[in-house]
Length: 156
Image 1: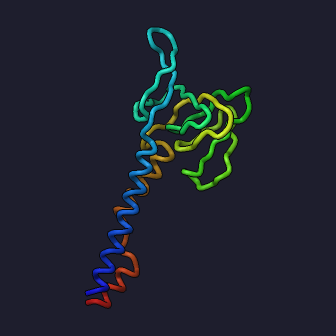
Image 2: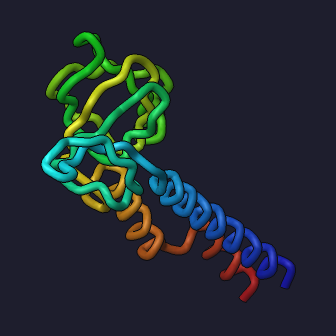
Image 3: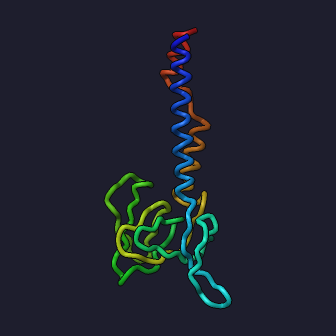
């Protein structure tokens, strides 16, 4: 009886951690971003929610900004490389340098210089969106852990 209770608590704890991680990643993507759009025949900077970004938008990437979708760098400050921390994607803590025409993945944070990027992949099609979808699929298909099977066999 005790082992079944322990098994249930461990399973609940693991499921809660996975759910919280997915919610945190989704919340991380929900912020405002400055894009350049045509307004009354003129290109102007407009602040929009991340979910309102569309492919083809030119996105402002200032220092400290979160990259809202997968973008191709089209301009950087004085043609210096844009440095982006991609630790949310690949776990590397050192920022990576990006030059003109390089693809920058969604979820990165600009750490040096500033630039403009062309939105090419948004939402579930972006690198971070694909990772979230893969996590959801794995969670749905997750087999019972070995220790859970062992506890069931011992308690039955």
